[in-house]
Image (cartoon, rainbow, N blue to C red; front, side, top):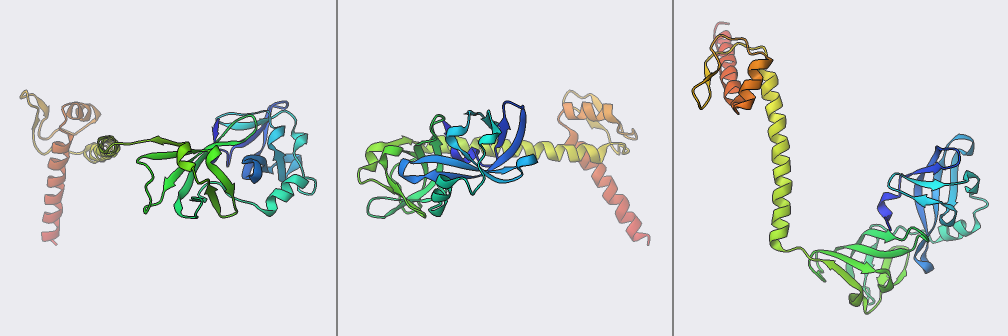
Length: 261
């Protein structure tokens, strides 16, 4: 099974010649069968231009590319009759509005999952509307619950709730996720700030002694702050104190210069 959203932009690769010859630009669906009919490919080389590759003509799909054994299976638009018919009612599955049998809004398609053999949609993930919550957490609906797909909406059957797959998220889980994301951002911000402090202190004159918690001298007043000193100060977790002392002295020097004008 593969995610629909990951196909756009994928490389189309010729297994026979061991080279890439295009990228997928669009997916074309056969709506009555809920499956991918073809890919619109931007080909390069001799086949340069817009071509169509029928899903049945591909060899395999992996995380990096769509593999084809014979690139001659690429169709010119004029020859792709089935594809051209599908294009008349072209739809985009992702971000399509999802409604129930009474046309009440449920949300929008966030992701679709297709089987690798026939390209059929097996289930969709719905981003729920702010006004509607049919379950807590992520909502997955099996393809059996889809009544039909129109150009601008996906309509579910009356009993669609019988085909729900939910991955509920408790308040504590959501808070834990928020905390983890915040922690990652905070750690990155701390590292970035530390890099700036190191760069600021390097090769400057130490204006005061910096002593660690054990009473050991990390920097003595009058020393030039080199890389070895920086390493010791960072290891002791005192780079901020060193940067403050250097910055304060720099500010004093600037103020004195300003007054002497």
